[in-house]
Length: 472
Image (tube, rainbow, N blue to C red; front, side, top):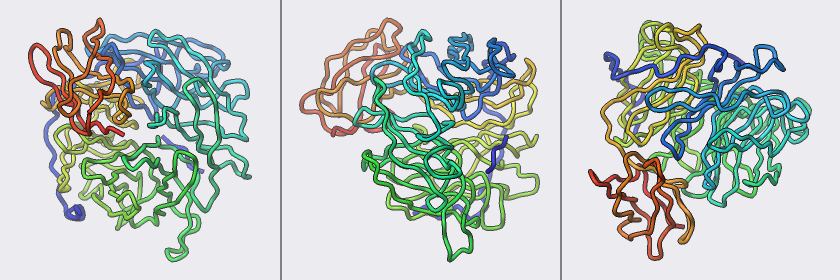
């Protein structure tokens, strides 16, 4: 076990390194307000602020080095600790939160709870926590990944360890928003083990994810191998789609992302055709995988190495991500890569002023900028940071969820929405309400709506959704 801190142009050396874009450190944690933002992906709330967790830090003395925190930070960088976790309500949250359709946040802790193996919880925007499930090892242990809300309304997730098999290789589960828990799959060596990344639901309805190690491929002489990609139906039918054999990558950590062309993209922390430290791959929904980009193409790995977070496809069509090492200081990078495989380093972390070792997946917020965290570093003692990177992309709106039935309630996140005069689903108008912050709209999918772009007409502009909304 390891625990540590048709676009085929990818095999050519296309790397550009540029000066830092408009980069700002918003928060530098000081341990009292949190420490170590692990596999953190921030979540944008209904009030326009961002919500996240720190694995350690806070003021609770129930855990050595404290038990972790849940925080809120405004786009301007004002930090508020919402919860100091302890062993009772869960401890050591490795992953971020998600905003569900009921306007509450959901998350996991890797430790604590009634049995000491971690919890699933829900939280109001004000920080009131309710534990929904405590793992007991037989149903899984130590969830590291965030949850995902599927189109059926249930939340799906993984535990990195535990389950009924000897060795405890991890599980997949679902839980209703009210707390009804169901175990769906237990991993063994053959289908992979230690699932660390968050699941995604693709447009075909399947859930997709990865295991950090394991899998069996006798033709490649690795058993166990270097991780897998799998898919699962919402009811639990499981299929292994790909087994990594080192030359095509090794140790997939972060979540997959489904791109506009329908393919799935992801990263591996290691591997590559020449033993390189990390790759970007693309895979069809059926499981046909192609190595898309190989890191450390030149001396010093100036293009980055060892990506642990997933990718995000931004509103310009390009992919954005982070590496935990490499770059000019060897402390990690933020990069952009085009669909043609041209990589550009946008920021090199220096460890002191801006943090180092970014593990989590970036969030493109509705203001167009990217927000992320670093595991450690920063000027307040080296306990990690929250940062913003702006590349000039325009504001947009984001729907939660991105697909639903006619009549279902939908949340639309955005900025400066006060005074909006129209909301349309592929041209079909909907009745809506703007919240008091001017940062969210509540509406329902109107009769006659078809799959396409959601548009919001504000007093100053027309904002379009970042992905097409799918009417089921």
